[in-house]
Amino acid sequence: MKEKDRKAWETILLGKKEAKRLDRVRKRVKYKYWQDMWKKVIKVKKPEEVMWLLWEAINDHHGFQYLTQAGYAEEALNLFLKDIGVTDGGEEE
Image (tube, rainbow, N blue to C red):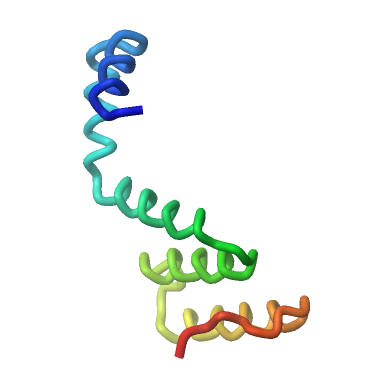
């Protein structure tokens, strides 16, 4: 659906105030981040790639808190993928 049409329908169905609120949300940096993440996820052919995308998303937002913890998480993900039979963990060097 085109953006203009979506805005019109949201205004009709949800009211002007809610439609404006949704428009503000769509302009947020985090909305763009999730939109970009979705574009990556829909291209994925292997489940392990989704695991790496999740690791990347957490790491990008400092979810592991420290570089050391991010390294431990990466090491653990690599081992997990190896344990379930994924030969190419997909880690970037």
